[in-house]
Image (tube, rainbow, N blue to C red; front, side, top):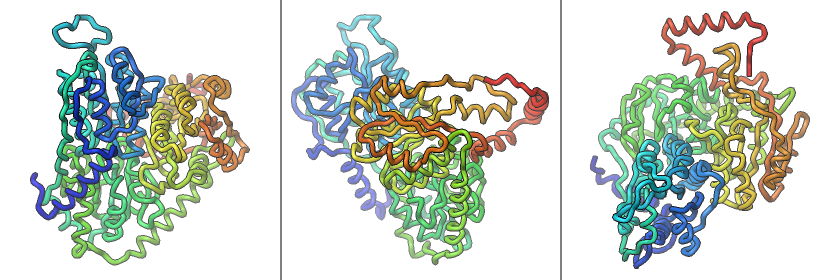
Length: 608
């Protein structure tokens, strides 16, 4: 839809901000002169603002990696291409700019696919430069790694650009950067045959014009009309799309006197200390404060959010009376909740539009609402502070201690562990882009390389991870990258020798557990083997003193936390279980109940 003239100045400012954010080289963004394809890749990456590349060199890309060094583009060697994609993901979440990976065809790409898939599902911008076998008249059959790279990339990216001639390298990479950030962000692939890296061409490649931001004027007018009804209590549900518009989001919330809940990936879009911030989610799976306060909401204003399965506790959010849904991706609108108005628009543009309509939207201060939120938050915090382990550290206690230990701009990464839901509830986020979670649970072990990628981007900031022992087994060797690169990430491993997440899901449904017991790991020996500092936190240890000691160490630290999950109730799991049970057909429910009843009689179930 064409952009209305009134919105043009705002769109121009937003587009200019994106140019500044992406292109940081200080030049005009052109790629000029005669050079090899390898140097054209590096020159274009620099012109597009890339200041770091993650990956592992290989035969089909050695020419390019040598050009990184020649032309001064920094890179970080990882131990596995899975880690390359996760590190680029962590870099992108922390900086707001596309992460860049460079991997060889075949195994390099297949190793990276899981991390790329997480970025796609979580709306994270990434540019994936993937090598390919030689093409042209001299190309031979049955080359090494001759899988179909494009076909492998297509399911986990927004688009794949295949380069067929050395002259096309700059345009393909520029298109990838533009698309990675356009609309709903995501990963984009660029496939480049390795023989093009040594061919030369005379380049004269300008930067691309910025794409217009989506803006549906008519739908926005309908939204304003609904929101102007002062008989309706508005509540805002903010997603990752709001992350860079925190000040506008705060002003809109104050103007509408609307409580603000976020998705998991939206945590930090508004400081969670704000008097209208209620935490994440607004259903039985999420913060108690959010659930309680949103029971009084008549009109939900959802901005830059998709209502995905994990972030809604298996779609446990209640259906409000009225819903306005705003998103940069039209395909996301109105897919989960019944929606009155769908607005295809950039979150920042829409928020600014609301502020410009203050005359008809502004409401008086709702002191009763603010008092309710303050009361509910205080009660919730008291509940968290009661969390005590008996034979180990309660994960909620660790989360609270990490909040006390980390600076406001410190970065916390959590993993695909049951504690991700406790962290989402209890960890209060002070600034945008400081709390990170693989929201769609695509990539176990994600937090270790993702934190390394973010620490490489911000070497002077505090960075920590909360990683389960199962996730540790997926990517533990990547800690050696932190050691080699002198990146002071603090890796907290929750050690209880099980896939606790699966045990909590399996035991009530099957009255036994299957394939959930993990080996006992000698973490001290592992740490010594890769040269990382080591610490243990055990029952009876002071969490605050232990964390102070951890963060005082100037390098990376592996911290084993002896963890006790007994008597831990996870709101997310309870909500998912109840909602899933409601969705069962009568015959399915009968089979479940029969199995549970029979197995309940077994006093010594076979569990492993």
